[in-house]
Image (tube, rainbow, N blue to C red):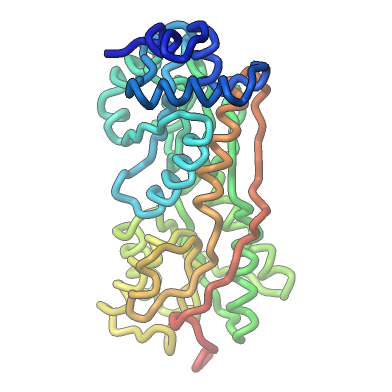
Length: 338
């Protein structure tokens, strides 16, 4: 295989000049013709830089790891798309890991951290106790950014404006005329669930309303738990006319519970979820949501991580641009009865 020395000889320059051209060194002062001659030699010889050797010299793997709660979650695919776009601009790759595997085999996480196979970690978790220990371990070894969880310690964080999203969802139901509004939260105790629940509560309070205790249920961040919460909500003596669901996948579970219980959406119950994804247009009925910038969160998390890798201090960033956006579909309507 051709080497950097072969390229240098073909271009009539030193090996150092070739390396600086390939590394886009902006401080290199050479003529345009010389630069083009180097790049022409690279193409003619089909030269590929030895990234492994460069990583050893710079103590950099050229990779970052995105750890997600469930690799099958469609929202994580959007996060990954944003992360990859930002990583490519810095000539890094994003490796995807499933948090469930690290929970079952914590030695695998420790091995990855100790071997320095990645330069930093981004963790998009749900906020359970095992996640906290995983996050603390990662942050003690490598630059680490947590997605949509505001944490203390050395890890940085990037989160949505969850309170604003919850206000937007609640205002939509109130403007339709609903007063009997339920809330199905995310994972109990997680700060993102608390932010969303508080956003609903404050919006209702501003209108002189509140959530009945039996209408405040935990829905987790998946269809199964959302389905169970929906069943419980519909099985009560008194039903709400609308429900804010803190996660779009949980909202899908609520729609399924309504079908099983013979409750017509939105005639008997309006349903609105937080976050949007491709299948919300195709549920029955199509699901009204408050969309939040998931791709932008992936980009911002990588940008912050790269700054931390370069030695800059951690930050806690709240994404307010673009703001949450109401997407009205057929699952919400004015109440038909009180």
